[in-house]
Image (cartoon, rainbow, N blue to C red; front, side):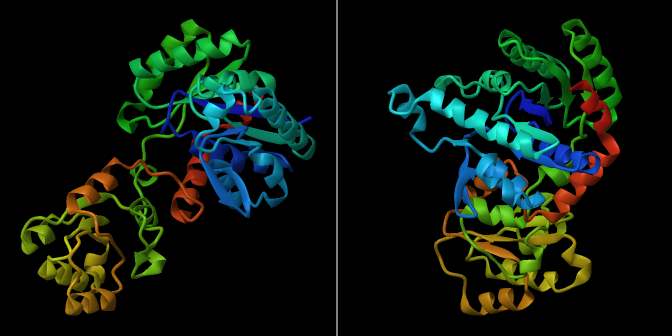
Length: 363
């Protein structure tokens, strides 16, 4: 029978998938056969010709789990599925049966199994499949991932803890992620004082990292729904700053910071030419990650030739500059299988900052 852990969270963007990636990496150093399952998938995609949750597809691609694909994402909820369950057109008991059957099969095939929940403890309640209930039905001890801070972490964990305990589920560990390095020790001291009263163990997870939090050029192309043009090798480059190219050409150049994505309207020929020219020089390339070129008006023929000749990565979109800026800044970056730099960093951080043997001992 496989050892297993249910990775829950206090909410979105707390680092749950990053933690699952880390556990997979560390478990593979200790156990011969390691698997992953996302019992309830709210984010459908198509991978290897199969409908499955995006997080399950990500883990499968990174860790080469093709043999496990039929079992990694047993229930995927497409748009409208919730209403079909409530209307009685989909039987919720059949969904639970599919989750339990897939988990049982992976337990036969694996020595260690990472079970990733779908968010906070209440997600899925509308169809009778809350994370708390799923963890209970799969008989898996829970690790809750939270964000950083003190008061909001304690409040959010307390709410989630109540639901897990109502279902009779053991919560073995709270892992506080996205801690500010300068405040890490102080935050953990107060969290341990607070959680000690709740009878829960709390450890520090990953510090906040701009590299993990910020998007890649490939991600920008995806959220703008346009192809990345120019240097394809730069697709995984991480963007640290987003700059709206609305000032004078010289002022934009003066404001460039390390790995900046610059949004320049399609009619700003002089600025586009300047940035494309600077990109040719190694001393400036570290500052210019790439361009987003919004606007209905086409880029002039000569300017387009200069852009293409420079190799500067860019995304062309016909939405407005303001709309593109809002879209980019409101996005929360998710790791993809193509993000080699981020994945390598997650593995390095996991080895340096997570004690897998100690986590394993709590299960």
